[in-house]
Length: 364
Image 1 (cartoon, rainbow, N blue to C red):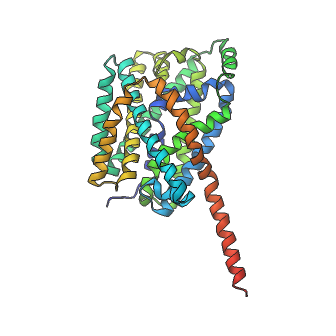
Image 2 (cartoon, helix red, strand yellow):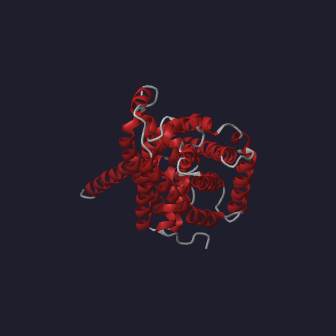
Image 3 (cartoon, helix red, strand yellow):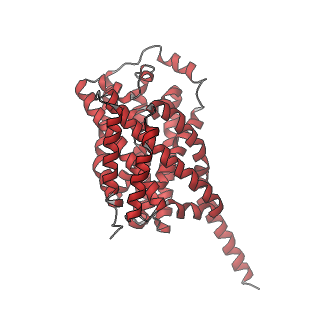
């Protein structure tokens, strides 16, 4: 079967693997979107945890009901074909742009941590991504099932250890208070953070609609969202203890791990690279699944092709790409978040109204 039954654990792994990529695992996203808000970041973490849980469950639930194998079917259902065309173009651009960011992150890890040429790190991820795509949806599922638990466990352990041993400088709160005037409000920042992630999430999760049931869809979405929120929260608390020093590094988590010892830093460097790999695959898979039937030869050609085409942009600095591309995609993705939050309830309400009208007409 092309679509074997996928367990709840694998659903959670696919969900979290799509989000925890270069920006998340490296600490760049958490720093630029959450840590800069100081103690207001706690409220932001609660907001993104709720949104990730609700939206993940909703996407998976609708994907299962519609038996989707790509996101177009889902978007058409929510907004109709006209608006869906616009969202489709935005999604494809974001998947391609996100793929470049992931490759750039892979290069940054090799450059900063392994003291090797950035292009070599990019090349290794490109090769592995292309090999995984040759196995279609099953390759994506198994890659995430194997690697995601490892990288999340390591991120949590390192962050918790840093929180335990590191004391925040007395002037940290003052610095963050003055920084808040420069950055977006924490609520807007939280919405942007979730919204740009949703493009990749819906592109990936919608491809497994034929391999899950309703119970797994809802539980997998909620657990995945909680896992993402908890991981972001722990990284946020750890980052506060070393702010603003971490702003000097393209890979803040490597700096944080280095405070725990050279061995821990080495392990973290590899695991950040693993996180980048899983999200690189997710971007390429989501793009290819939109353009061709999953597991077909055309799917493999398109997936490998878009991965190769993303290489030139990936040569730009990783931190600059995160700071530039992610906020832009975040604003573009706000429309998708609004649709996912309001679309299903409005459709349900419309269905009730139509049924009442039909029942009323039947009386005469």
